[in-house]
Length: 135
Image (cartoon, rainbow, N blue to C red; front, side, top):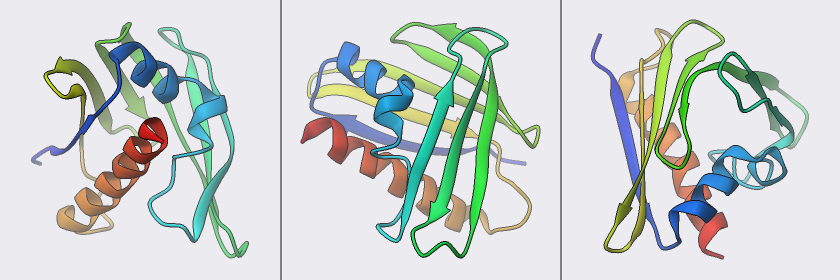
């Protein structure tokens, strides 16, 4: 199955982008695709073998789930390699660019939703992250 990729260039130094991506105190402010959702709780043990858990929840209380994974490799301010809780692989790359920091996520698609829908959802979350960091 073909991997899906989403990218955003964030007008901020890589150190700040890394901090706001990996620190749960920041994750709760950006980790949702639409304003009708939120991330009321986030934890992360940022070390190889450590887990992150992000509670993704509809604001109306109708649905929630734990988006979680295990860190497989960490290169500070460069790359995270993760196995998501359902066994899919995910990588997040951080690279300095002329306009700030490029963040690129590459992940295995799941089998329940069309790849285009998954790409749009993950891109929406990445766009929320960009807005949060740049505010």
